[in-house]
Length: 153
Image (cartoon, rainbow, N blue to C red; front, side, top):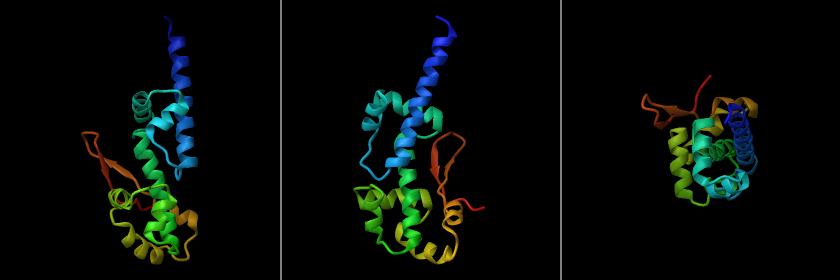
């Protein structure tokens, strides 16, 4: 067997992974799970998880939660929605899980973020506020994920 069929299969897999990533970006507020994403990509859930992590450095679920938290951060900065309303608006079904994940990624609970960031980004263009408050996953030397506070320019 030559390398061309393997290379072609790799390109097809990467294209499917990109479609999964794009779907998460578009449909982050919808009920999505790895099994549904895998079915849409015609892959097994295990293969999708392994391939997605290899291609993008995190699992599909972690990527989905990061997108949800990014959107939640923007909604909380606006200040016109409660934390519970934001939780459900971004597709989370559990306020406890949302608050825990938000705190892991952002470094503070959503209620504190809402109070502090609404003041800190007041008058700032939303595109700038999004960039300076984006959550970033940090990795330690062993490769396991650590959740850090938002990066600053």
